[in-house]
Image 1: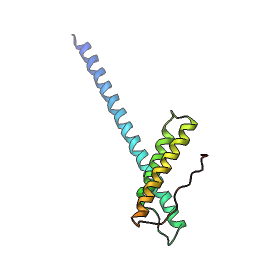
Image 2: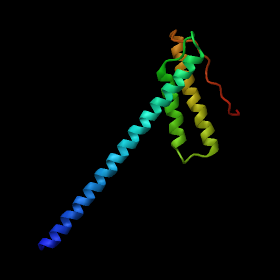
Image 3: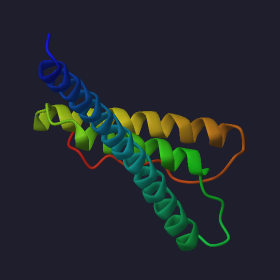
Image 4: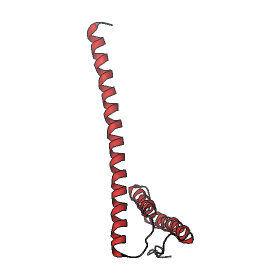
Length: 120
């Protein structure tokens, strides 16, 4: 192997490494941005509800975070039919209501359950 071939091979390996590192950084930066948006969206929803219900107790923030996280995951899933989306929304509401019922059972708050607007 002559020097020119070795230099080209070294440059190619360097470029591939750089591309892989760039892709990894971009992937984790996007993941971090989505997580930050999720938390901000949940906090905004929580703050708005707390403002509307001044003086009343509301569900803890983690209930809002969980619900928002599941809805966003559902929105990002492009492989679902309309019927599957409706079913997944029902599951999310069921899980959210179970969390709220458990908190309510422990005396944590008094708030209505999420109502399903989807046809049964």
